[in-house]
Image 1 (tube, rainbow, N blue to C red):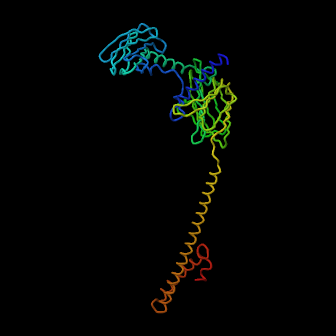
Image 2 (image 1 turned 180 degrees about the horizontal axis):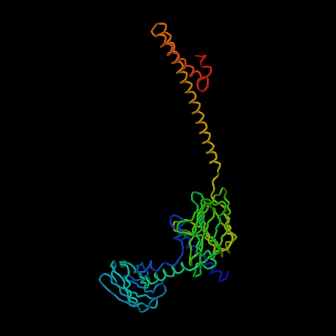
Image 3 (image 1 turned 60 degrees about the horizontal axis):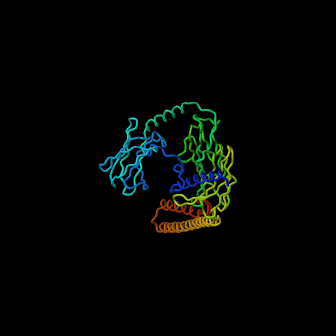
Length: 418
């Protein structure tokens, strides 16, 4: 292996391990996993523990606008526990002050070009020291950046191209043996103006993809329409993040995923959660490794030199976790049988109950008819009342016998039987 190859592999390996190590406890956290230099405004004036320094030491670094623009010969002062000490920054922009008591509350200050910089309050640790960075000109940087962004937004777009940056990656993870695929893409425009690539970038996901969605943290220019992701330009200078997720069903231990990308990929990086004997291969892979995330989940790492615009990535997965569908089908069949049996017994039970109630009603009406006849013979009913009651009873008996005969509405042989 040549020295150049070794250096390329080393850089790739470090980036891959960083991408895995930065994964959060809940699995894939694409926004957190991006590897960028820290925003100077986020670290300015903050005290960072420095156990490598002597006890009671405060190291103050002074820079102008950004890291690396060290200010040498700058006077700084640190006040802690009622004691103030001063120092002068060296070629690295640092002044190291010692002898502060443990647990003493303090601040560091300096004045650059009339701008007074004051650190956040800190406590001197019992062991080791602390480091503080004071950055001048942050307000001017923010104002200048805002003007540049406004000018870029107002400027017309120019014809050009974009790439999918080297921090981009593809992740495959499992939830209850279901495979989820994530594309963490950073679309890079290296020009100083907006770029029109001749239309939107269209990413057609595999035909088997399910529940495709654009994740939170993506630029608003990305939308999902079924299994198609549409990324609308023009693209501003810098990076446009697009984060996509979809489900990939599988019924066997082997699966092939093919994805064509509409823009060139600067570098290929695929992270796959390691489950059982799962293996991932690709004709585009030139590197293979493994890594472990902060939550202890192991990942298989595959990478290559990237893809041209319109290039297709092929991932061949073997040893996927899969469960037989026979127990599920048997269970479904048993449920159907139970439901049909329940419906049948319910129907026959209801029919038998109805027949019993009709027979009881018939016997009751016949009993009433007998009483009416007896009362008529005994002279207890006059002709009109007898005729009316007898007619009502005969009508009811007709209907009951008709229903017992299975004839809706009570018509048919009931009259003769009555």
